Length: 612
Image (cartoon, rainbow, N blue to C red; front, side, top):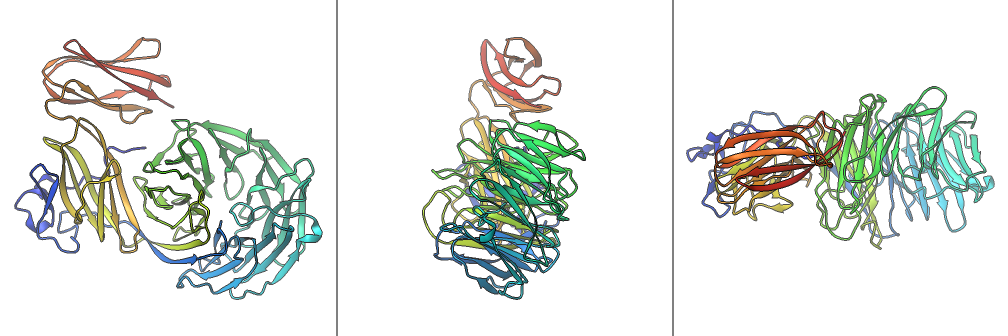
C-alpha cells in the first residue's frame, strides 16, 4: 500500500534564505543541485524545527560467517530468555552463541550433513536433530547452553524413520518451556511425527499415517506443548502429543509452505493463490474467510500472534521481484489493516519471503527474504505493527536468508542463510544478531514531496543518521551526500506520477525508511492530462488529478464494464492548471471501471479497480 505522505512537519519558513542556522539545504536554480548552509556532521532536529522524538532503532550486534563447507540453508533460534542463539545448517552441525557476545561460537557440535535446531524461549533447553541423507542415519539430542555434551541422545536408526531437510525451518519444533520436542519424518512408505519429553530420550508418542509417504512440513507445537499442527502434502493435521492421536485433518486444496499457526493452535492461516483463515471450534477446524491480494500474487509466509487475532502474511509477485507485507485481524474479516510494499527488484534471481516470526504481542515482525540481484531491499526486514508506514529497520546479508527468529518481547532478532543467493551455486553462510533499542536511534522526523513550478520539491528532516538517501522511482536524487535536514528541487520532469522514498542510515548500515510518497506532477504547457487513481486498486475511495491547458467545461465520469455511467464526480467550468478530486467507491461493486475526462471536445481515460 503506497501512502500519499509520511509526516509533514517542515514549514516553508525553514527553507528561507535566512535560515542558515537550521542546517537546511537551499534549492538553487533548475539543475537539481543543492547548496549546503552551515552544516556539520549531523543536524539536531530541535535546531531544524523538528520536535518529534526519535523512534527505536536496531543495532546489528554481530555477524558470524562460514567460508566453506557447502551451502548453509541455516535454521536459527533464540533461547533461554534471549540469552543465546542456537543455529544449525548443512555441513556444519550446531553452533551456540551468546546473544550479547562477539559472534564467536561458545561451542560447536560437529556433524556432517543436515542439522536442525529448536530452542526453548523460557528455559535453558536446546535440541538438535541430525540427519545424514546419504544413509538416513538419524539422531536427536538435548543440550544446555553451557556445554556441547548432550544431556541425552536418541538413536533414530532403530525406529526406521528419517527426517527430511531438518536444516530448514519448520521441520523441528519445541514448546516454549522446552518440555516437548516434535520431529517429523517418514520411512519411505508412511509419515511419522515423534514427540519427546525434556527429561527422556525415549519418545512420548509417535503419530503415524500409512496413507502418506511424505514427511511433515511447517511443523508447529502449541506453546504449552500439548498439540502439534503441521502440513503434509495438501492436508493440515492436528495431533494430540500425549497420546499421538489424530484430532483433525483439513484439506488445504494444494500443497503450500505458506502456513501460520497461533501459539495455542486455535487459528491457522494458509494459502498460495489466495489466503485462507481457519478457526478451531473445539473439535475441528472450520473456514472463516478468504482474501485475494490484488494482482494475482502468491502467498509466501504467514504467522499469527498470541492474541489469536493478529495475522501477518507476506505475498510475492509473479515476477518474483516484489513483496507485500499485509496485516489482518481475524475478527475483522478479509480486509487488511495495513500493507507494506517493498521496492521492485531487478535481475534474474527470485526475491521471495522465506520465513516470518512475530513477537508474542504481535508488535514486532521480522521477515527473511532470498533477495534480488540489485539489492533493492534488505534480506532481513523488521516492521512495527503500530507504526507500519515503512521499515522499522532492515539489514543486508551476503546471500539468501532461510531462517529468522525474534525474541518473545521483540528486543532481539536473528537470521541465518546461505553465503550466496538461493539461485546461485556456492558455499558458506551467515548468521546475524540484532538488538532493537526502544530508547534511541535514527528517526525520520518529517518527509514531504509536492509539485512545484519547475519540478517536485522534496523536504526532509532526520535525527541520528550518518547518511541520508532519497530516491525517485528507485534512483538516487543526488550523487552528493545529503544532510540530515534539507530541501531539494527535482527538476526537468515530464508530466506523470513519481514515487519518492527516504532512507536514513545509522553507523551499522541499518536504516529506517519513509515513503514512498507518490506525487502527480504536471509540467506547464502540457496538454489535457489525467492521472492514474491512487490507490489502485481502491477500497473506500481514490484520488485523481488532471491538467487543463486552458479554462474549459470539464466532465469526469465513471463507467462500469457494461458502459453504464455510475458516477460523475466532476461537472464544472474550471480554470487552466492542475486540479484534483476524490472519488467515493465505498458503494461500488468490486470490478474494473473506466474513468473518462472530457474537456473542449477532447477525451482522456484511465482505469480503476475496486476491491473489497
